[in-house]
Amino acid sequence: MSTLTQPLLDAFETHSVAGVAAALDAGLDVTQPIEGKQPVDHLIEMYYRSDAFPACLTLVLARGARIEDALLRMVLLDDIDGLRALSVPAQEIIAHRVSLPCAFTPLDGATLLHVAAEYGHVAMTRHLLALGADVDARAAVDPHGMNGHTPLFHTVNSNGNRSLPVMRVLLEAGARTDVLLPGITWGAGFDWATTCFDVTPVSYAQLGLLRQMQRTEADTYHTTRLLLAAAGRSVPTELNVPNRYLRS
Figure 1 (cartoon, rainbow, N blue to C red):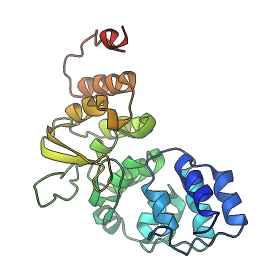
Figure 2: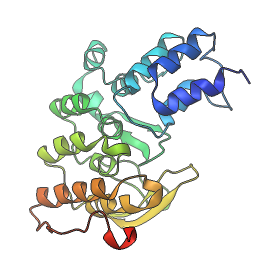
Figure 3: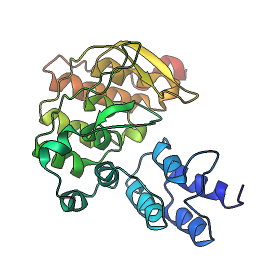
């Protein structure tokens, strides 16, 4: 394994544009697999979410990495002009389905709106909705009847609360907060995989209190309040955040 491999993976994990550039400038070949997986796939699957992700992805693609699905590529890059340049009819864009590993909420049989929601791409979310994307489109259901979630589910438990602005956009577009799933598997295929049963966007948001979700109590309850308000439900004024009993 190249001595440049770990620095590149470290840069991917923190979305360090400078770190990615340094590894590539030192000669790392992004067309060669790392631990049996293409480097670009490592970047896409990493759990971190930030505004620097498109820049990191752009660097890797410029050095020869490939994402064969052009529509997916433009959504991951949050590149609306690039999406327009493909000259694909709007109906094909909003009907397009993808499947890719995701450290959090599944992206199996997902629409491009699911992808934009997962990565916190506000501009692309607005663009896809303007094209006519179904705000309540369902992802694929697995053999156990799990998943089948809407894009909103990707925003209520996002890393660092990055997708909160997208959540607001989806709610403004009429996203339902009462969609009930038999279950959903968080982090499928990863060490922290967790199947949660009988979930709605509201209960899924509350599951942010689980340790593996890596969310703060404050973010969890803030998101929950917003979902309840959007649904016209009563919003408790005292949620004990942070939990005083646990801190004593």
